[in-house]
Image 1: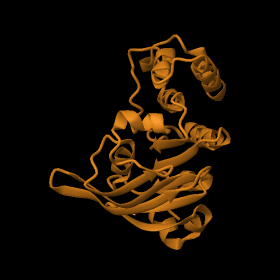
Image 2: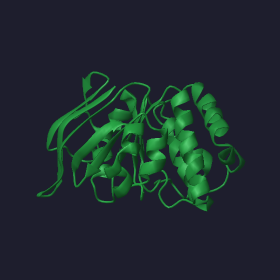
Image 3: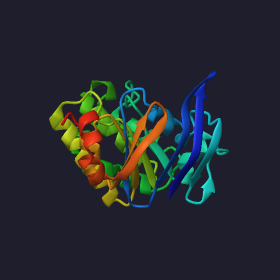
Length: 233
C-alpha cells in the first residue's frame, strides 16, 4: 500500500531524514519506534505532505505521492492523527469530527459519526462539549476519530500514547488494533516501543534520521539491542 524509497528531508540546510526506506502492506500495523528527535514525526509529515521532501519517492497505492499537495492526500486515502492531537479546542467534539469529514457531503457522514461514537463511547457522551475540556486521553481519542472520519485506507498515527497514563495508553493501543478490524492499514510512530511492537505486525527502528533495524514485531522485541535500548530490559 505504501512504499518509501530513499526519502530525504531537511529543515533549512540541516538534513534530518537520510534516505529512509520502508513499506507498509495492506491490512498491516507497522510501527516506527525510536527516541525523541529521531525523525519519526518528520517522516509522517513528509508522508502527509506538510513537510517538503528533498529527494526520494513515496508511492501510495501505486501512485507517486510527492507531487500531490497535502490537501489532496486525504482524498487519496491517507489521513494523519498528528503529534500533540491538534484538535480545535474551542469547537465541540461533534464539530471536530465533522471537520474530519470535510471532503464528504453525503448521508454516510452520519453513519461515520455513529461508528466513531461506538469506537469511542466517551465522545458520544461529550459530543456537545468544547473539545478543550476533554482529558488528554479523550483528546487523543478525538484526534484519532477525526482522522477516521476522512475514510482513510491508511492511517498515520503520530505518538498516540504521548503524555497519557498507562491505563489510558493500554486503551489507545487496543483501539489501534480495532482500527485494523475496520479495514484500515496503520503506520504507527511511537516512543513507547514495547507497547507499539506488541500490537504491530512489523517494525522499524529509527535513529537520527536513519532506519537502523527492521523486522517482524516479535523478532524486534526479542532482539537484545532493542530490549536494552528501548525496552529497559
